[in-house]
Image (cartoon, rainbow, N blue to C red; front, side, top):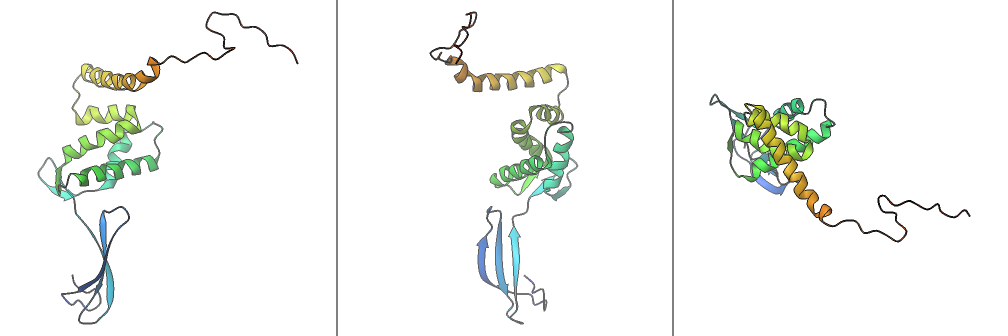
Length: 179
């Protein structure tokens, strides 16, 4: 690490701390030549391999821009998009891989996007999963409906209990006495 003051080619680490989210390390350094101190922030770099074979640095902003198009006209805020991009980056970093295909990143976006907005999920999935026909859309919608029924099944299995004084369907209600 070059000293930013005197450009000496070496420095000594005085203190190291991880950031709150654990994605970077803050190091306090001292130059052995001029004795001045400076701070560096180190992060593991992620690279994206495009279809063309070109490699570029990972960018949350590209995720936000791509998902923003799918969320157009939907009740999704910029904060929601930023949180989604952060969640996607955390999922990608948790794989431990330094290089990922752009296609894999698109597939990683699908889960958090489905949790955020199902219509936006279908729009995005139609591109990344290459929907060719209405049957592909119907199959994706069927999966979403099955998940909804699966999550609503415990509630539907236990009918609500009638409290004393409740009126059942088709039963006439009696007026309450005047006070």
